[in-house]
Amino acid sequence: MLEIESGRGIMGNAFYRDLIRGSLIQGARYLVIGLRNSYKYGKTGDGDDFAKGREQLDAIYASGRMTLPFDGVLLFGW
Image 1 (cartoon, rainbow, N blue to C red):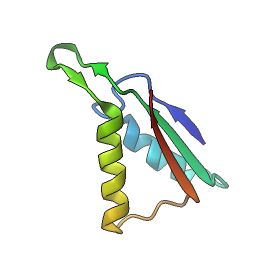
Image 2 (cartoon, rainbow, N blue to C red):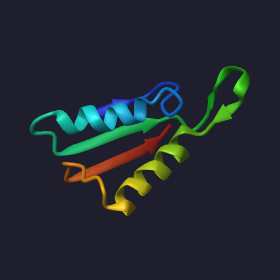
Image 3 (cartoon, rainbow, N blue to C red):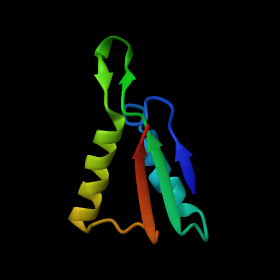
Image 4 (cartoon, helix red, strand yellow):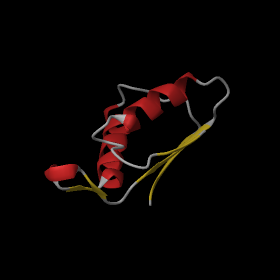
């Protein structure tokens, strides 16, 4: 399954929606999520969604409390 977020991937919780919705797709063995390296959030400043998404994904795997049903997850920044 491939999801590419154009903006507000972290601030708009699209990253989390992609994880959960992707987990619900029967037969999906791999999840690929693309997040922007730089995104301007109005007056709040710039954000690096890829770095934040990587931190969250690392935390999910490190905690061991949530098991994702994929053979692999690829997160890339663009």
